[in-house]
Amino acid sequence: MAHQPETLRSGLAKLRCCPPNPRAQRPALRAGDSATVRRVDEPGAAADTAFNGDDPPTKPRLFLALLHHPVLNRNDEIITSQIDSFDFFDLSRLSLAYGIERCFFVNHLPSQRALAQRLVDHGRAEARQTEIRGAFRCSVWAPDLRAAVESITAMTGRSPTTVATSAKRLQSTITTKDIRTRLGCGEPVLLLFGKAWGLTSEALANADYLLEPIDLRTGYNHLSVRSAVSIIVDRVLGRD
Image (spheres, helix red, strand yellow):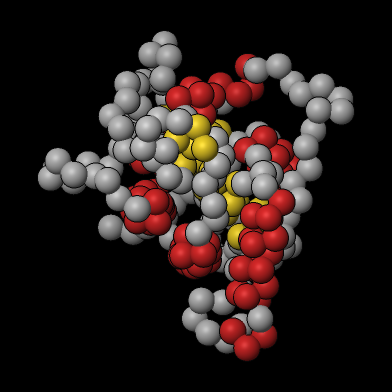
């Protein structure tokens, strides 16, 4: 019997393989509205990915986006966070290890684009090509989330399902098993993470789904974004 995941955020329907993407019900972009991703690198093909349970007919098409704007500070004010070199290095290595197709670092500031370029150049340096971390071929910069979505759509031929994350316990969330089901159907999925104190309420509301928070039953889950991304990606793509 097919797995029956949690309810949708709207609470009106059950997920099925392959369930419809709520984004498909939204109005199409008008001519002239598109935003081109100004990428800092041209990645090569990602490596094959381990998949837990029943292997899908094709490699899971999982994408990551680390948003630096709009995000919240500790006072719930909307801010722009800076790109962190440790985030960049660790998530780049994670993407290579798990076969993530693209890891977008989303920040609209020109100075942050320049920083992202320097970090990619550092990872691509010939002297470091032979090191275990490899070139950061999966890591790219995008000015905003819309540009990242359009880049994925151009790559895959379909708009990705967006799944937002939060350390807060929210209503009508889905699980990593639900994401696995969608990937197993060949659906591209874009996981959204927020820097600083997390994604804004608007960013959460605009996502197709909300992922349940990491809960280790200790009462504490205030993890660094690097740790949270690693845990969630392994739960989706790793082997038991």
